Image 1 (cartoon, rainbow, N blue to C red):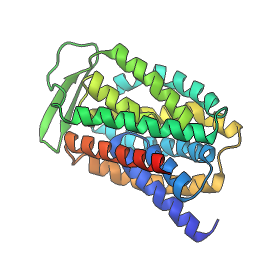
Image 2 (cartoon, rainbow, N blue to C red):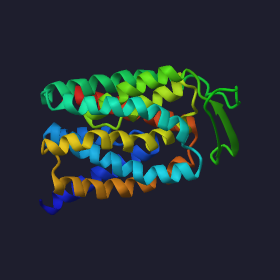
Image 3 (tube, rainbow, N blue to C red):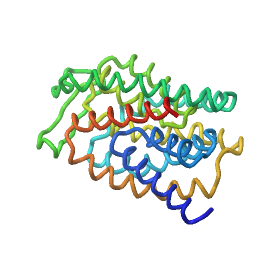
Length: 269
């Protein structure tokens, strides 16, 4: 690998890590199009690299988010039961599909989630009061200087979407966060900042469930993956620090903008 290629992969990994830690999406929605469209890396190999990088993003961001109490550990572990099952199924399915089919699924998914987040960004934030639910959450938000309290609603809907998110994670290498974050925020009433932090906690576990399948199919390139992980670790550190200072609605707007941009890129290319 040339120095130029190494630096380009490092740059892509850094941006992916920053977005992944900030938005709770693992960074795969940026890293995969970047690898495929600009670096001409085969999509199956790009997905495999992304899945390993998702593990790095989660490891960096989750420990900080748990310490700050942004991440709802109980909710994350409950949702992870169906997410992991979906990831294993998606990992097997991906190796049976063509690169063209995977690209089309990816682009369509980005459009769908973008529309969900546009709708949600126009609504008020989730309730900040306990309602006696089975799973509650509480954290101090330095961006608003307030103590935020919430109750998780419609947990069965969250479990169902988590299964789909896990399947998409194994299928597309995106960490599943682009589905889990809107699901927790839109369906379960979890504030955006808590949803992204909880997603960051979950995506690493989900990625591990499917990473070994890609390894068995010899999809993971050691040199490319090593360069990408180094960039992801640097970006994740910056994204985690930035997320604490941003308002939840600002994070939602960034989330929507990133998805719409990448959706257009995937369809045009």
